[in-house]
Length: 395
Image (cartoon, rainbow, N blue to C red; front, top):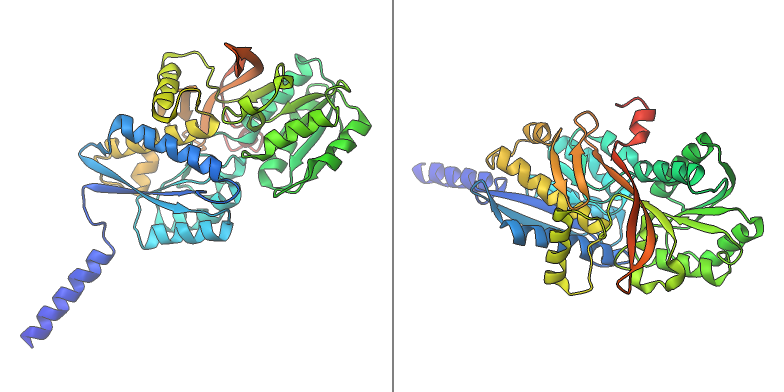
């Protein structure tokens, strides 16, 4: 009988160990990115930013070791959701982060709500995401945040009154399309027509031919990061839209620092709205760019995907330090709300009401600087909140 009781106690101890992190002084951070597949370049950039932050700040904060548990989304929403469930239930992570694409973030929302685990979005930019769980925050951007500013600028200062819109046919593209139309028409502009193209492997030529046939003054385009934006810009040029005096007004992915040098000089003069440019002049950003180039090579520059991941780690470290490594979901979210930080992109804050990021938006023009293309800021809109939430009375 005594042997049976000892066996039962031992089994109970093992059961507890199976659901308890290996070390009480370790915080596990689950990272879901695309390390393979069509968005692997973005995953690589974001992982490099995470690694750089941890190299600079160490892997221990407030006496607590930060342990990354990485999973590959493999370009699949189903895979991403399964990875999130495994990280929460099997690996018992205390933070979940990464999330390049909106559908992945939306799929994980019910699981983080049930587990009460903070989820830090490092990229996915559809405005609605943070409304899907009280445990979600974001360190990247919302598409309406930059797009409405861009549309207002185009209509009031860019000299453009007739625009055609072209977007990838999924949630972020529709978000961007809606934001541009709202702000552009509200400021006196006219939308000539709109077109949507498939998310995966689109042939841009027939869609751009439609634009050329209508001859608007400008074309607003949203294409998710990766190889597609460069292809879109080159096709725009090859079909002669620029020679037809149609101005390309792309989302910032089209002139992302990872791809900017792959664009010929016809990109000079192109204007975008973005929340980060490597050409932003501040001490923090100069140090960030210098550290990036030291780690990853001269001529390499961080981009908007990098800064979202870099600041995501800064937020996680802030919470771990404030809670002295004892992570409770509700206390973590309380520590996240209202967080202020001097980022390489400029000042940022997490809105305490919406848990979304508040940040500067920069109108940038592509210029040649020291023989290299750069996104040079020409105007700053300070501390912009997500307008979608304001318009929907969530503020």
